[in-house]
Length: 164
Image (cartoon, one colour):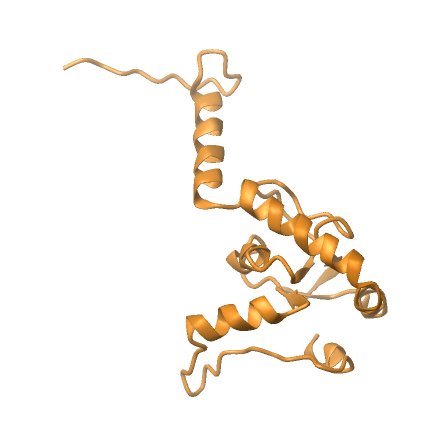
């Protein structure tokens, strides 16, 4: 993926040097994010990454992420609406970029059309603020628990609250 993205001028890769145990300061990280037109957030061990949501807090930067392979808290990522999504394929137990030319085409399109890029970035920023904050995710969990444990639930849970 990094080799693929090196073809674009002005690309900055922000990585931690794990061998030397050096990490970006929080201030530098947020500064880089705020100044970026696009931010790649590849998945690691979990698809639903904090990084995906952090990009939404920098409303000028469009998120580039793999297409979701699991259900997440909404609003969902939608290609060309609130993110640039790319296909992955599972090989030898790891996900790899499946269609590099298509991703390059999408990136070039949004670099050549700044108003479209900004609209996609702003849409993800709105979605993060409406559904991906601690409050929004807590509300999502509580609402689903209420539904699961309600007397009309089809899950068959029986909650017995005794008095002491």
